[in-house]
Image (tube, rainbow, N blue to C red; front, side, top):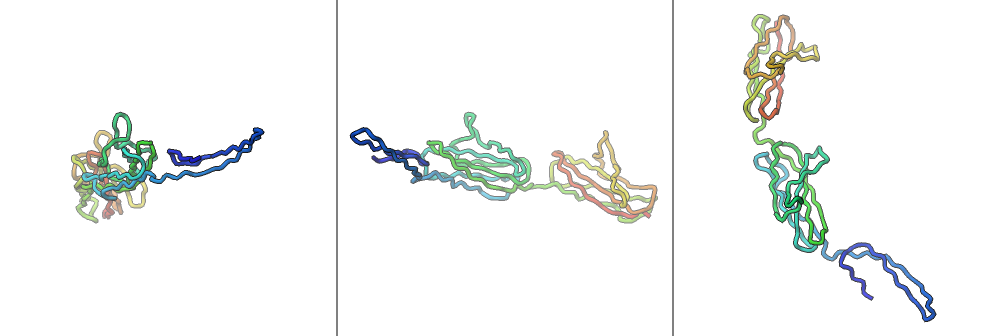
Length: 232
């Protein structure tokens, strides 16, 4: 008797032998049936690193198994444990599209996943890790008027931002270099962030001070820049 199952896997086989007196002896076997043409996931991505505005194209390629194939695309931040569907059709992540653009709004490191599934529901997944860079990162190009001056003169902090997403807001801080506590030099409606692009630092005491300028864009991206000055 030929045993020829339609699916690969581990099987138990049994042969019973019976004589004319109806005595029966059984013998068991365990066999492994391998898939002669297993489903393969040969999907690729367009690049491992690119900018937010460009994105990454996931291109699926399946081989073996039983056509037709369907595909599912997922993504997550590398620091996250939760995958999000990048593709969906009739409530399912599986679609017929053989490519998908991943274009997140935020820069960072992401994991991408492509699943391929054949008509018998055999499924093979393939993962990638990619880096999405900010095409126009926020920059803090702030300056100070001097590194050393007298108490009566003070120092002007001039905020300058570039990149990111306008409008910008600015926050100014100071502390004695020997201290661990920063003090707000600017405040508006309870926040240290203001629209003024310059601020005068004029302490009552001489000494060495640390100054800080934060710039923040409309998406709340923030970059700080520190200075050390001497007030005589």
